[in-house]
Image (cartoon, rainbow, N blue to C red; front, side, top):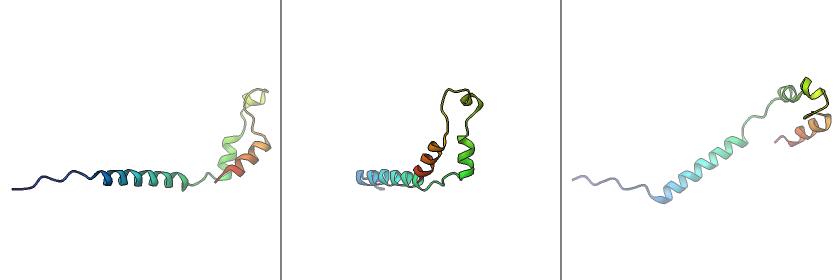
Length: 70
């Protein structure tokens, strides 16, 4: 007679879920940051923003984004 497989212990499932969460957090933190050239290129205002309305990227905003990078 063959014995049936034992069910997965609950602690193993919870530990596995915790390990997956830790790996996801590490992947987010260790993600390479964009180069300064690409960050500035994406932050340049469009012609619609030059008309006086909407979001504007000023020197103050660029400085904030530079200091907020991890």
